Length: 512
Image (cartoon, rainbow, N blue to C red; front, side):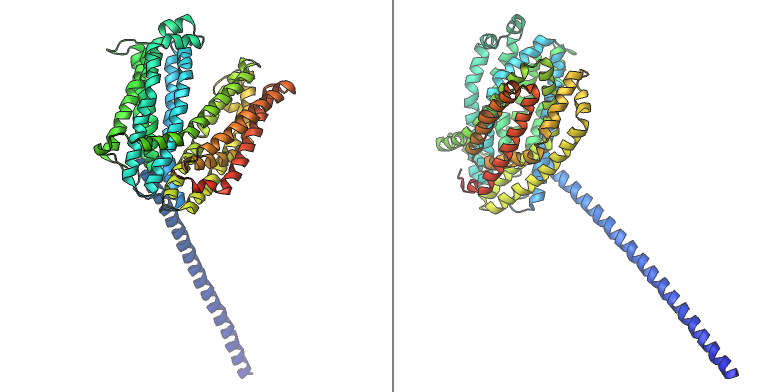
């Protein structure tokens, strides 16, 4: 009996010991798990901090300018470094446009009309300047990709000579025939008698506008987008400061009215051009011009002109097609025009990141083709296109949910709000394709194939969008909503077709 009791005690002790041991093991395991969890959390935190630090460093590089070789670094990083300064550049340009017209608007409707009529002629200049800029970006990017920095400098010099030559007839017409040019556009007596000085300054000094376009295109093609951004911030910053001082005669300065706005623009952009030339001749991260290169090379100029023709065509087609669209919309009343105009301003502002990424593609394609890396050039387009699509889908969602609120920021007219909101909703349906069209078009331009996008734009905007707008609006009686749906159909179609043509890959063999 005693023996049995002893065995029972030993058994109980074993059970207690086992249970205690298991508890200790479980506690130890739990401690280990807790420690591992803490380590995992710390690792994740460190990784997040590392990513943030890396993003911050890349952001600083993008703004200050990077010496990175865009044909070697990761494509995502290359897109980021190029797109950020381009987006900031566009933001400043749009801010200046708003501030400039704000101060001019204080002088009355005739002063605003003077600006509008003068810009009608400047739009032609802008078309030439932007088309030439496309060619310059493509050519300089190709030379940089080929590691031919000296040839890139030569192309830069020839493009500057060409910009000055193009500006001369506009300057002559503006200085000597401003009144006549305003009269042709139907200007009233006040505009002709008092506003012609504005046109004299703007057209007479148009060389600074052309040079600002072209030299910034040189910087972008070389990969120095941060310099282009900085120059534009300087030029437009000075312009915005001088605008009210010269228009209203603040302090010791005389009150110059509408003429003061033009003088402010010329001073601001003139200083911007001097800054550009200083950077260009002293050397930046990727390009430098030497005094020994300051002579005409007609073969290079011929190449630039030939490549730019398609770009100029693209701009002219886009601007004239918009004139036809607005002419159709004008038949349905001023509220429709106002609503469309406000919606367009909202679209332009919200799409700046997308344009920045698209412009980055032109540089990447040009440089990678120059480096004999066509597959990398193509991959950069697909990656940027995906980012662009995601961004614009997000914008489209905002338009769909808050279109009336967005338009309502600029007006309290219910009809105008209704029209603008309808435009934003309908056109935003094409944004998932539109993002790809922007990128694919810039890929063609960056490769130096500016003719293909011109042909595409001619077919889809002149032969499809304009006739379809008239048919839906007038023949079918859909009025302004028919125009909006026609634009949606045309832009969706042009996006899909451009992307299909891009996939065929013929742009890879273009020589510039």
